[in-house]
Image (cartoon, rainbow, N blue to C red; front, side, top):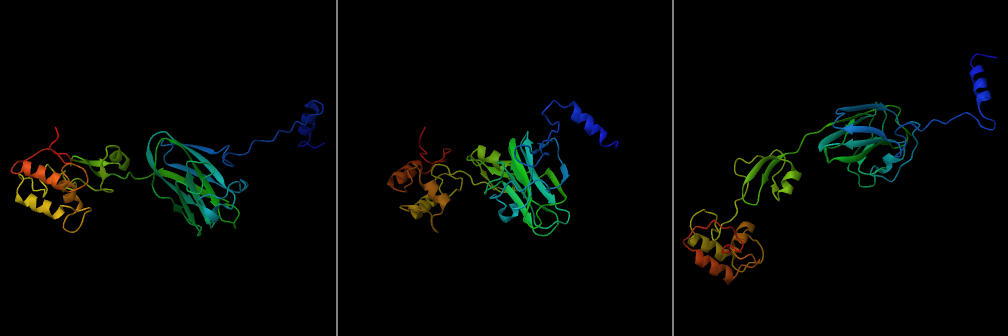
Amino acid sequence: MSGSLFPLVIAALMAPPGQVNLEQPPPPEGFDCDKPIPVILPAEFPYVSVNTTCEAGNDYTNTCLGYYDEGEDLVYQRTVTEALTAVFTLDPLGTPWSAIAVDYMCPPDDHCLTQSTKSAGTEHETDDVFLEPGTYYVMVDTWPSPDCVPQFTLTIHEGWWPVGACCLTDGTCLDGMWPSECADTNGAYQGDWTECEPDVCPQPCRCGDIDGGGQPVDLNDFATFALCFGSTQPGPMCDAAARNCCDLNGDQTIDLDDFATLAVVHGTASTRCVPDCLAG
């Protein structure tokens, strides 16, 4: 009896009657959504995984990858512990028609968070994507043929934070704000990498200061009011900012009620903002 067979015979003799002592190993990590490969971010930045989709099976189709999800797929689960921006890079190491999808769901649906596909067997990556704390999934796949990617390198690294100037409703400006932070303050995000200087934020119109001159209400303000009087929407002679300032009582109509208020404040400088600029 050969040495390699002897341990198998001993194992069979030790098994209870009627029972075969051959346990099937669990599926390897990543083969499906029930046992994805775990990743914790940002603790594991930059995350690098060398792996293969071969033998993983074609479990998931009808995703945001289109025909690129018809091959064998491998799944990663990312646990994000604090808000961050990430970029997902896939190098198929020469295998053409590779794909990567990132989503809140597993498998990814047809409107995933971000994705990248490439017909050439070269490296490609997703856009920078902002991620709140939570659980996300990454699926690596291919458009057959080939049916699988024999070897690839998945890299997850920190992306750049999109920050810029944020204009608040009182005309003040905050630098270095994330878009979500600006929205939380009811501000207007001015675009990535914008700055508060020079003056990028429109100043709120003061009561009666329709031309925005910052001076006491005068005939110039009356002239602007005349151009906007009776208008139902902004136009060449009365833009949105002027029309908003003319609507002194905030009823969306430029009429004699607004003119009456303008007459009352003529010659004065007010710190109140329209609409309803005489309130309080």
